[in-house]
Length: 84
Image 1 (tube, rainbow, N blue to C red):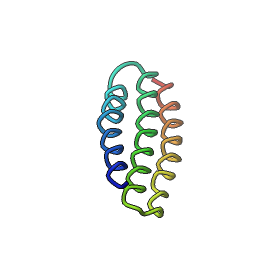
Image 2 (cartoon, one colour):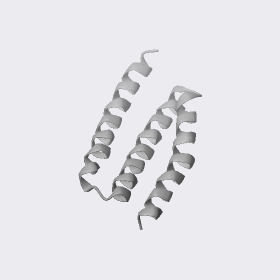
Image 3 (cartoon, helix red, strand yellow):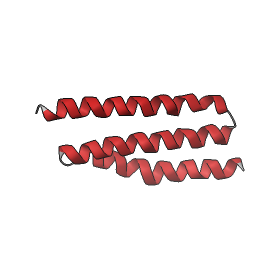
Image 4 (cartoon, helix red, strand yellow):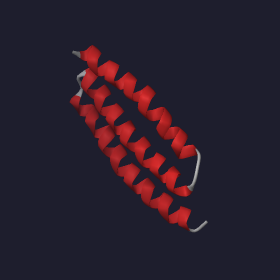
């Protein structure tokens, strides 16, 4: 069963994080904000899949902190991006 979670994490890393980083690096302010949000979501899902794959439920605190920091990062990006 662990192999399936690792396969899911690999597919998520290849198919989700690449496009999210590309969208976050290019385009208008709105598309960069969308890329930032998508990167946070994919990163949290990736960390959850890896914690399940290695069988350590105590590692689930890391994606929870990432979600909170991603939300705060979006607020900061919105505030500083609006001033340009």
